[in-house]
Length: 216
Image (tube, rainbow, N blue to C red; front, side, top):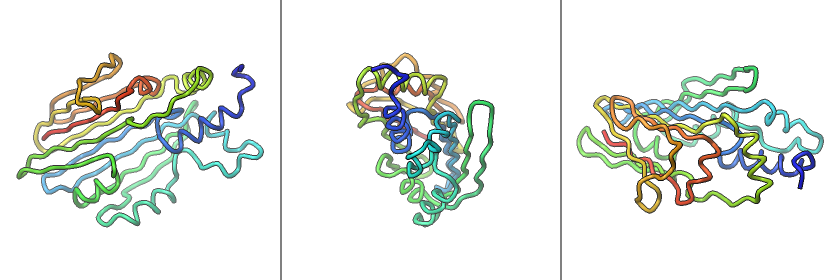
């Protein structure tokens, strides 16, 4: 199958991006944790304007927007006690449309409800551990689909950062508890702010998923 004849694959890839946040867009998440369990969660979606325009194709009007807009955020946040939207913005750049949402949470339960079912928190006094599981159920694609995803995902990253009042550490394992094998991860493992970043295409190498373990 030639890429120039794969309109169906383009639409399928866009839908996959809506549901899984790991193709065709860049996504960053920053968590700032306070001593009392409250904090701030900042999400930024960097969406290719090419992908965004696919939603305007004939017969594709019902395809969900990518990424979700403020109204979708509000519908979600309204169901989470202890969380609210602090700000939401949209900015058009030459290549991308950038969506940024800042969410305030009053307690760890609200944060987990937003991240659930892929996260857990345990506390010991003012110290704690936050675990987030990612990419443990990626579907398989044929070669044509992977070539298309590679084209649309070029230069897009997925990243997560975390900060707390005291120094933190970040450990990366796969779902089986083994050290991460990918060589394409940018990692800041310790300090007041820890983080990791990986290219969108590189996430498809994580066959056994990814566990982020933040300790503070």
